[in-house]
Amino acid sequence: MNNPFRYEQAFARNIGWITPEEQQTLRGKRVAIAGIGGVGGVHLLTLTRLGISKFNIADFDEFDIPNFNRQVGAMMSTLGQPKAEVLARMARDINPEVEIEVFPAGVDAGNIDAFLGNADLYVDGLDFFAFDARRLTFAKCAALGIPATTAAPLGMGAALLNFMPGRMTFEEYFQWGDLPDIDKAIRFAIGLAPAGLHRPYLVLPSSVNFEEQRGPSTFMACQLCAGIVGTEALKILLGRGKVLAAPYGMQFDAFRNKLKETWRPGGNSHPIQKIAIAIGKRQFGKLQQH
Image (cartoon, rainbow, N blue to C red; front, top):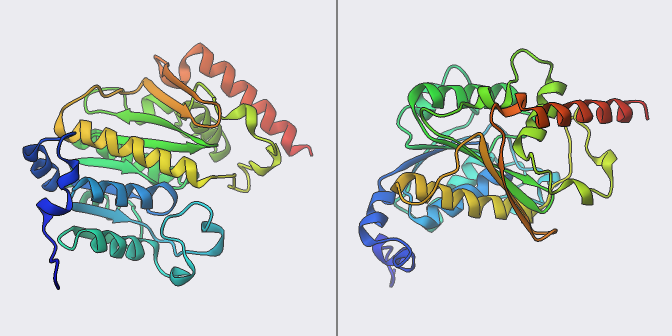
């Protein structure tokens, strides 16, 4: 090969926004990503291009045609292939030195310690409706003192929440408790983006169906999420820059050209959130009648 891979050369254009020393720091960090389809796949490739060289990735699913509109690894050539294996291959094609441990059965109580035990950061890429896996991973992050970030692709924008060690936890913010999945979905949707910037331009409300566990999506939103998560990862792993931690959050909507920082002390127990949850439940009830 005329141009063998060299880490310093491959990521030289990062230098300037980060120092050479910081680049080497990122090189040694390990990021765990659960869910490697929509946002998770583009998170992995973004962080790989940032120069992070160690990952734990988990996903039990395979690529299918309905993934084509938003999932970076979904192509005719990858149909029927495991998502985690495809994305690991893509990351290694960027950085042949990258270390990736694949968890092909997803995350569960049996492997959560191995999945998160050596991670410096957890990035949430799980499906919106993966309530049990999401609760498990965020609770374990809180117990282990691992920073955790989630960016939700909403409409044509992204909503960010960070859960930092010693600060408000995922459960304290969303307050799922033992509620039915429908209630968890409503609380999750409203808690992710209190500003609700995406809601006014949903042109077909019937495309959102919590009971059937489906909703619309765009690749633009996934890409915006990855840019935000990549930047949050840089700040958290290098200890440089302001990191918003729950109950603070942020939503950017490219369609509406708007950026909004949010603050919901008490999480979903905040009076505004209680009203929004009540409205959400009422709207869901109306949809069920049609």
